[in-house]
Length: 142
Image 1 (cartoon, rainbow, N blue to C red):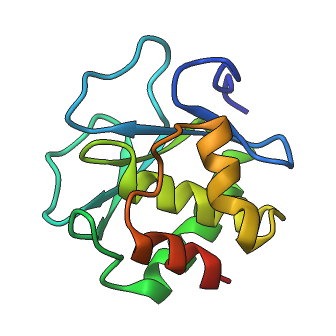
Image 2 (cartoon, rainbow, N blue to C red):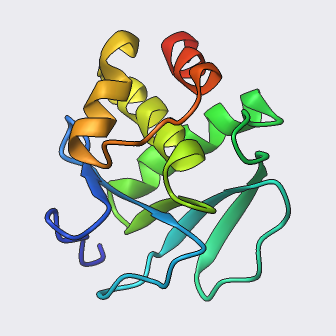
């Protein structure tokens, strides 16, 4: 098992189960500390290669994932990895797509859909989940 994220490190969200997931914007420099062992990149175009293992899902800025079933499967796999690895979810700015994905992870971890956006805004970033359709997507996610 690897060294986990520091729960108080910037961008690290503690899910109700205690699992830790880091969210961040790819336009910003890597935060100090250990690198993620796995990253889920949510971008409209394929991102530049990264040092560690990663998966790319097509998700245009301000919209929703192009492959919703693939997105749900990727989040479930990410939760499994989070039990033993440092995992991160990242988009361009780290708020809209990343916040939406973190809110969906919270739903999978037991937070009611109706409370997931508020949970992520309280524990990750107050401006997370930027658009009405992203909020609706979280409300309907299962």
